[in-house]
Image 1 (cartoon, rainbow, N blue to C red):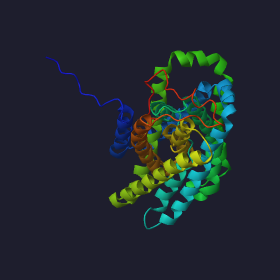
Image 2: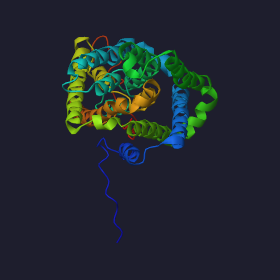
Image 3: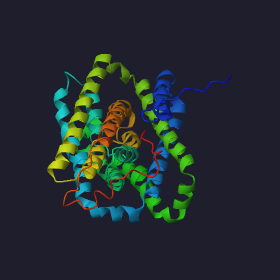
Image 4: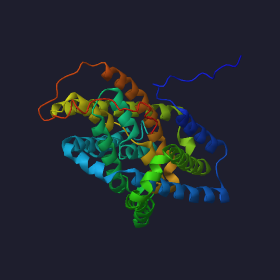
Length: 351
């Protein structure tokens, strides 16, 4: 008799992509790209970043984004969590140097706080928790769109020379590798949008493959430069503890802050999940442009935080799903109508 290969339960926040990320890091540690191969990998990584942001632009529906502006108070709250509260906590982490974090790890920790929110996982967890799914879709989209400009600008302001030397050349790289492809995708959306919709699964593999290439290139550069001797088990444990505190603070602030502002339950769920998470898919390409050869340590805090947020939010979403219903607040007439789950339960949460 043939045996079926055991699979993890679908509700667990682990999937093949996260395993592929770990395998890519291991490959870079064992067989880092050197010399000519490093140049080829670097060029391919640059092209992959441009392709990623072109696809982001081509997929974002301008009409849906404009329609989502009707719920502007919720979106401003999410943006404030993502680009105000998170960066302030990131700056406060400077007090952990050098006793808890090294300067390099703290720079990566601060960069993590500047990255935009997620889209897919925010939607998925909001759906599981019976929150305002349309609001989560728009909030994640607005955050990703704003992050193309806001994240590099905040990095220039707050990281300075720590980010590998943020100069006019760095700004041009960001414009040509991130902003120009994104705008090109928006301009060509009317012609390529249908193709992208029909080949969603294939393009999802392209997305993930591009990110894996960026990870391999960044970690290879770190191995060749010999930076990994700075990350001792004690430093890694301290980094995980700091990130756990960061996540707990943002989950608490986004939930109770939204309640204080008068949002109903469905909206508070969308705010909590969109306002407390960071996008690995957007952050890794940005780090490769902003940090250059220093990107390996800079992306480590983001990769660890990404896994942590999935595990914690999966538990919270399950508990929120069992909460009793409550009537919408007076300023949230659409809350009850928009709080149903997505019709498609197979929403991925790995990004």
